[in-house]
Amino acid sequence: MSAFVYQVQQFARDEGGVTAIEYGLLAVLIAVALMAGATLLGSNLDTLFSSLGTMM
Figure 1: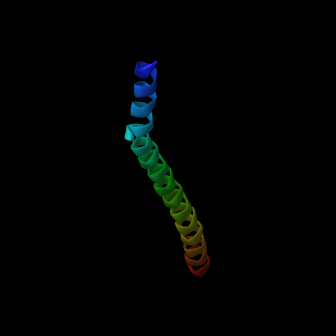
Figure 2: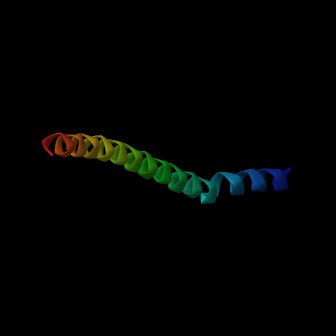
């Protein structure tokens, strides 16, 4: 029984999985920010080139 309790305590202290999850969430957040920025930039460039095409 004490071996089981020891294993449970070790599992509770282990932070390796938590760190991996944090890095994963950070990567997802960065990816979402990049996609949002690219979408806004694309829309602005489309408007700019449409305006330039109209002026020519």
